[in-house]
Image (cartoon, rainbow, N blue to C red; front, side, top):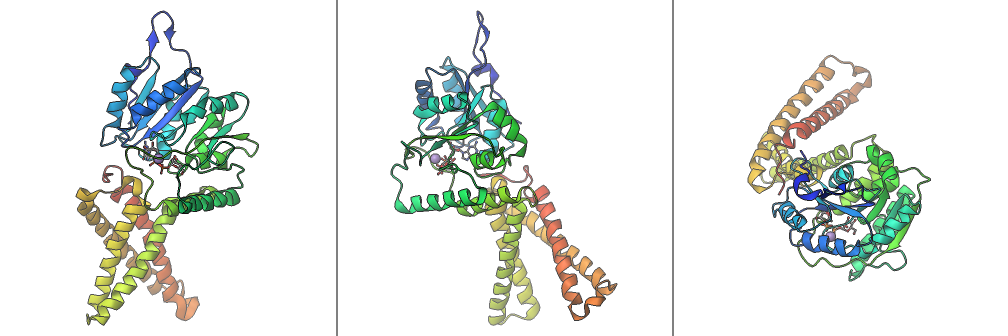
Length: 391
Ligand code: GDD
Ligand code: MN
C-alpha cells in the first residue's frame, strides 16, 4: 500500500483554491538517504525558482526513516513536497513508476537523492520537453557533461554498457544508463503499461519501449561524487544489466526472473556434481555422496536465488533459516514431482520409440516440469512479499 502524505504536503491557499497543476514534477526515489534528502530538496527549490513544480519523494520504507525526515522538511516549505512511503513494493524502477503515477505535472523528471545528478540543468530539460521533445536525457556524454572523478576502469565498464545498449536496443542516446531524465506526460502515459517495474534502468525501458519516432534529446551534466550515505547499486549489477538488455530485446516472451532462476539452477547442477565427486574422493558411499551433493546444491541455489533472482524480496540474515526451510520443502516436493513424471513417462512408454535414449529424454522432461513447478512455488511462497524481508 502506498501512503500519499496529503495532509502535510499539498499546499492550498484559501484565496486561490487548490494549487494549480505544476509544470514539473520531480520524482526522487530514495532508499536510506536521510542524510541527503533535505540537502537535495533545498537544492531543487533553489534550482527551480522559475519553474512551477512539485517534488514527489518515493521511499521504500527506509530503515533510516528517510520518509520521516523528508516529511518534516516538507512542512517547513511552501512548495508542495509529497512523500510516498511504500511498504509493500520495492525497487528503483517501480518506485519511479509509483512517483510518476502520483505526479501531476506536465513534465516529469527523475533525479537521484544523493546529489550525484546536477539539479541546475533541470530547467533546460523542462524547456526541451516543453519545446516538443518526448524524452530528455541528462547525459554525461553530451556537450557540457562529464564523469567527474570516475576512475579509468569505471569509465570503461560504463562505456561497455553504453555501447551494448546502443547496439542491442538501437538507441541513439549517448548515455542510456542515466538515472537522470525527463519525459512528457504523454510519453509516460503511452509507455507506462509496457514498462517492466522490475527493470533495472527505467530510462532504458522508456527508450526501448517508446515509439521509434519519439523525439529524444540530451542535456549535458557532470556526475558528482556521493558525499553522504551509501550506493545501493553494488553486487550483481553487471549480470542484472545484461539480463535487462536481454529482456528488453526478447520482450516478455520469457520472464527475466525465470532466466535468472534457470541460470542459478544450472550453476547448482555444477555444484551438485562437484560436491558429489569430492565426497566420493573422500571415501563416502555412493548414496551418501549423492545426498551430500544434492544438499550442497540446494543450499547453493537458495543463497544464489536470494542474492540474484529474488533480490528485491530477499531474506536478510535474521530470516535466512526460514528461507532455507521453505526452499528445502519446495526442493523435496520438486524431487517428488520429477520422480513421478519420470516414472510415468518411462514405465508407460510413450517414449519407447526413442530406443535407448528414452529414459534420458523422460528424465529431461521430468526435470523441466519439476523446475517450472519449483519456480512457481518459490515465486509465490518462498519469496512471496510477506515471507521475504529486505535488509
Ligand atoms: N525507492 C527506492 N527503492 N529508491 C532506490 C532504491 C530502491 O530500491 N534503490 C536505489 N534507490 C535510490 C537511491 O536512494 C538513490 O536516490 C537513487 O535511487 C540511485 O541509487 P544509487 O545507489 O545512488 O545509484 P548509483 O549512484 O550507483 O547509480 C546511479 O548512476 C547510474 C549511472 O551510472 C543512478 O543514478 C542510476 O540511476 C544511474 O543509472
Ligand atoms: Mn548514486
